[in-house]
Length: 478
Image 1 (tube, rainbow, N blue to C red):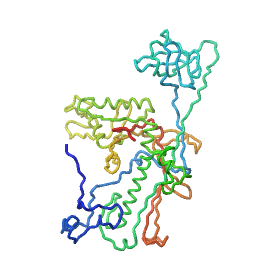
Image 2 (image 1 turned 180 degrees about the vertical axis):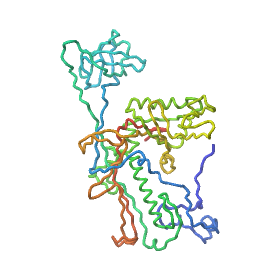
Image 3 (image 1 turned 120 degrees about the vertical axis):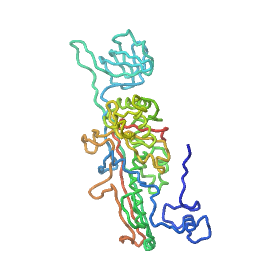
């Protein structure tokens, strides 16, 4: 297989600048004697007035618009509480192989409870009743076996399935209060700016353009401003997808005084982004292939993920946002589901038929009790973003809403699993601010001979019930 090489339509000696700067490296000499930098000699006599859309639609935002929502926030922090599991269970339990189990300190198991004790290494299990307990142990007696000799000494799993009391006895000594886990996130301030001098606005070189925003016409400096705005809108999404909390002893927290605007007295917090939240509280599946050439290949691997979802919230509808390679691997997996059809293709699925041209770009499918809707995520394909790193293959995002307790409102509320909170009040809405300063382009705020367009937002992402999310990676994400 050959390799792709990135090349430009301009001479190799030219280095385009991302800003409008008059540099020797980006100067086009239309009448010079240096062939390596002679734009006109190479392309004369055709110099096109229309700008070529070399990279097509370059914007990568839109993911959060599809799966999330945005709502205002008044404070420096958003805090919410999520329910813990309903049933009592413990892992890494030890056994003396007679009648004593070693449990985590502070366990809530009490006498008369009935337990299932499982040894995953065999697998084998015993149903037992609890006779007495201490802070770290429980004396139990199996219903069937004479003792615990059939189980290992370490690595056992235990869960409570009920209780049993004798006639005429007092009530249970158990008092298990439902608990919750509290989570929080802090918004970050995102800024950008576009600037053009008054002289440059007077020397307009017209170019016919068509932008990703759907506008077209003859523009010059306003096109650059429009692209700055589009890039900033991408940053709004990328910041909350890639965001990281500042470690207490990390580089940013230790050296925050060296970053402009920060000081030793300003707490460097950062913000927890989507990828970081799934790595911390969700499910990470590494080296997913889902491909294969035979019937059923890949589907068994996908069923491993379904089994993990069964142990969590088991949300029925889920969205799959994938890069190109993983999306095609899913197509291959689904196309190989039925080996009985010609060529191993399941003609009866997704309204395909043998008589019609097959559409193997599956967008939705059902497996077990789950519905999945698959789409490409341009952010994972773009060479200037995650497409250039190739370490994240996709994510699984549950659809619908979850119920959480909002510490600020003091009540239970329903929120999308994934949503953005932006800073806003009656005096200022910081969801997406833009304003003009200077003395050019209608602004008259200073004696600066330029027009400056400023952009600002303050926001964070809330990833609720992250245990229902899955991150697909090619290698461990750092």
